[in-house]
Image 1 (cartoon, rainbow, N blue to C red):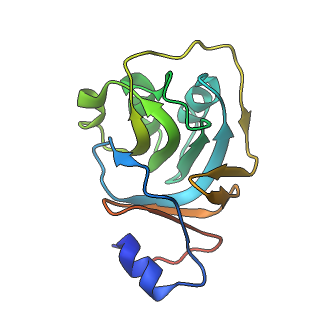
Image 2: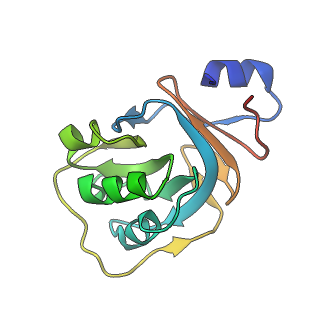
Length: 159
């Protein structure tokens, strides 16, 4: 297994460290995988779509613009993602159903929680470069998250 401090110590030239803005909401505290990126604002249509596809141990990285106005993930989509083999989600935005998210075997990092769901309009983009918490994330980058933080690398750096 890994810890983000060890990854930073062992690979200082390779890691990009997200600003310490995120809290843990999922039942899996530590998780890693290759990034699949989404950009959306208060509309989780693309997050829902991705959760329904084979995750193959990857991580959905959501650039929600830092908005805390609407939740981009709730219990139903989280359970779907877990059932489809996603390792986790890093959401630069909000989640809901916190009590249930804790029971799902899925990594979830987000800025905060709000009970309001999104108004799905089919908006958002998948597979583009996003910048969240001061770090640029490309599709296919490796994302590592644990209780200490979230780091990104262009290449795999775990054992």
